[in-house]
Length: 298
Image 1 (cartoon, rainbow, N blue to C red):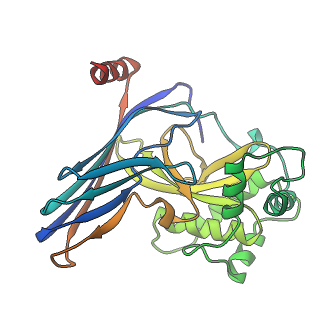
Image 2 (tube, one colour):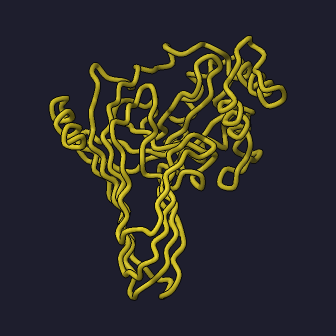
């Protein structure tokens, strides 16, 4: 299930806290807590708040196009709070295996190989320099996504020769969910990446948020697979389906190391600390969105 009948509007608040038993300083941090602005995901407003107030705070676009913030807190503190707040509208087209090009996965492998060797897939299309970079990095192993004969064998049990890629990735996701044992959404995404890359396909890990049917929300991770002529198509192993309007995209990279919401270093004190991580993803009517935007402009 993917897509919806109407545009969805959200107020998103992502709050991360670190409590230290004694005073620490300084702290350097890198945050990926502001959503990407995309055709199907319009970011009306996004702001990162750090407490204690940082001596320096810079927001920039990383090589993958993600919105990243870097901050430096000089003041001594026992509690660090980093909050990403945004207003976003999502209008994601319905996606299913039937709506995607019926390219065989082994044909796509050849097109990925073409991009890696010449910068062009060889089908008459011309990927942007950003896509060439993402396709190339998405086809290679990374620190958290090593390749192995076992993952390739697992993938080949699902990917029959000539099978359309759109259906094969959904079948692979369903098989991953049937593997027994506790795993996080990041674990399933990394397993799926390893299987896809072992076949020569290009796939990236996506970090974002997902709103549940009960109004709850959580930090989430899924996989984006490159489809020639279409671009990056996002599939969520947690639901065995392509993403829909309940998903918000923060950013993408080779693995979780590239898209961790917050990491950094603090000097002083002990290594012991308590952390908290909470996400609110509140639906808004178009009128409520307009009111909030008006307050920001006034």
